[in-house]
Length: 181
Image 1 (tube, rainbow, N blue to C red):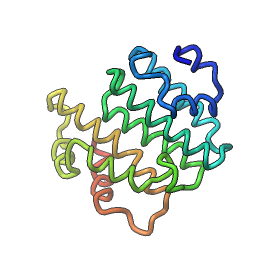
Image 2 (cartoon, rainbow, N blue to C red; image 1 turned 45 degrees about the vertical axis):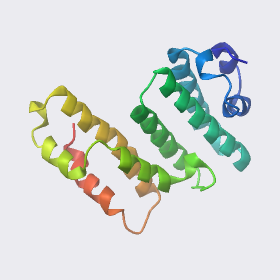
Image 3 (cartoon, rainbow, N blue to C red; image 1 turned 90 degrees about the vertical axis):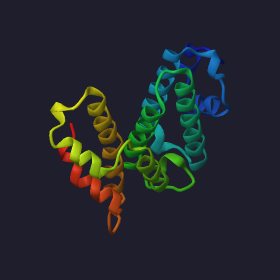
Image 4 (cartoon, helix red, strand yellow; image 1 turned 120 degrees about the horizontal axis):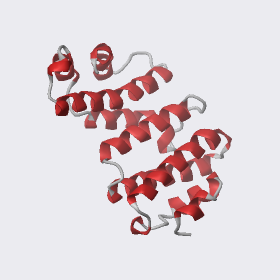
């Protein structure tokens, strides 16, 4: 089971089991095929995740992690793009499925911590830069977009969890977010 076509023919559960076993090897698929597997698995997870047992949710979560890692290693996406995809999928799943600390994709705390570590600048820096963002270099605008793409789903997850009080770091980003390009 090493071709993209073989993987594409599988339903979610067998697909996740194959991918969670770290098959195919990263070198067995091209970068474009790994990106296709990421898209395929994301679509299947978004559609069928709620019907799975906890055991299969854990397998799917592991499979998604392996697939993202392979897509990064192949050069199909970079690490931050993989994080954005992971957080957005978690947001989609958490809208219909309760949090579960045993399933990485349903465990919001570590995801939010990870995005706060990976965001390329502080909320204060982003706020200062965004005041006149149209005059910035394209690389600075991309950094602001990356920050927005990381923080937006994280804020949505935090709101979805209806925490008593939003993490102060997220509160800072919540104030800045509307001004980002």
